Image 1 (cartoon, rainbow, N blue to C red):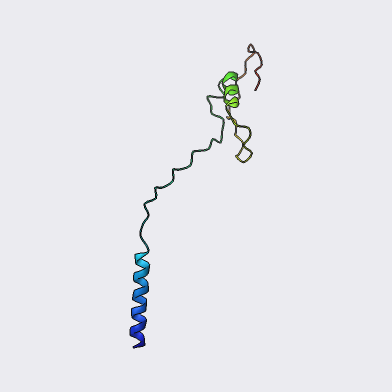
Image 2 (cartoon, helix red, strand yellow):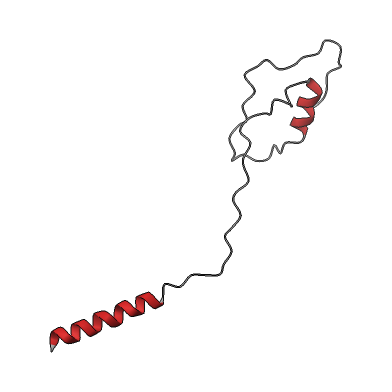
Length: 85
């Protein structure tokens, strides 16, 4: 009798757990935006391009990693006037 009661209790518990395993209709969150880790090569092509890229960056974010410069040398100009950043 005790074995039968234990079996019925275990069966009821397993059915209860199976009934609670339904899926949800919540949409998946969008994947995170890729984070830039380097200055693009197009920004290092000319001094004007680098200055315009730097002016577009947010300098108030103190939690992200610093950007790395390309392995090649940055472009310089002997004729252009210095630009403010």
